[in-house]
Length: 593
Ligand code: GCB
Image (cartoon, rainbow, N blue to C red; front, side, top):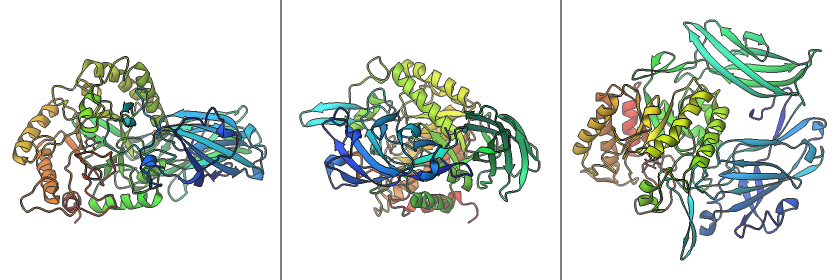
């Protein structure tokens, strides 16, 4: 699937703005065919945004079930004879869409795009009625999983991850047009041989009989540097300007579908960063050079908008990454908006790209978040069918993000149960699948602190060890001396495996403005002291090739006795003001100051 674009042959129309919106607590809308006519009794809802925090109503915030969105779009008259497509960048956690009363698409998974051709269901020059039912109910066969529990006070949705389960249409929706003969996919794989770069491309197309594929690669000044013909091939770039961390240099690959008369039937632009990624012993190499990750696990999380994509926050967050000296982040705990990855490409920020497989660990997290008494891997809970949904989530992630130079590592899950035979059986095929889909990038998963060195049965499948560790917080709470010793001991154990280790989470909650001369838990001083303890450990272990603090900013969670109006492990507050830890990290990471 290609992301909608405006090109010489393609046009798109955004369907963002205010839509009609209605909760469907009784679950009646589908059988009553609400998609056939204008929705009754509606509010207005912003798209893109999470619906949860828009209304001042706890019932909306905590709602799970079907919610209905509807809008009308006038199909441009100039699109007569064109192929018309309705495209969603995401809808959380699943959605079904109708156009003028006809179902056109249904999609499972909250963070990857889906689309449908709607040519036969619309009239050019006329308005089309677009209705979407979004459903955010989690179950054992969803990624992420969850359950609905019956309580004396009604049904409650329970899940085993530590961020608020925002839902809705979180990213832009588009109507776009192409010709009948059109490109459907492009894959680029880049290589380096000294000063020479290579761009291997593969293009797929539909209704393209009698056409020819022509490609032109241009540098950032628009100067042609290579060209080719045919649906696949390799382009060579002499004196290549590499994509590198901190230098987001991009070439533009224009792909054209041309008929016998030389008419361009379709044109698409793919940006290309020429770089290589490899693991060599305990080193993580980008362009053959050892790379040390500095940065964060982030969230898509902002006040009011929730997980809705917001361009202003996108830019501001990257400014803060630069301010603090971060060279990378992880898309914890789900694939982020495509605009985020595009921007990471342009800014030379390195990305660990994660699926939405968080919370595959009810026995452990039940203690924190409720929902206790479940076995993780069993025929009744997370089972073969769940694994197939997980596999599909991986397929969709790789398909979406394979061409981003910023993406250097796939993370196929966050903190699943990983110390049991069930986990080993569940995960082995998913690692195999990811490598088969993309042989060019290493694969890993973020390991939970109870699956310590020697206990984890899943890390053996990873190219990189990714550790989430809270020594000094959840473990050796408040005792940084004991924490330092225990942590170094564990880390040295992992280092003996001979793989690079990225600390994908470490940190402490700090309530902004809370100070204590003798560093106490929850104070800004303790957060700084805990980070510094970690850094002493990392600096003594060569196999540690990265440090991602948990978290970039404070974020919303469910209510709980370990959370003070959300998770406060941010080094920035939720509105992006620095805590003392942000200044401390800046002193460590900004070598230029
Ligand atoms: C973790 C999770 C993350 C939590 C964090 C915490 O290990 O991966 O989602 O928010 O710990 O603060 O407890």
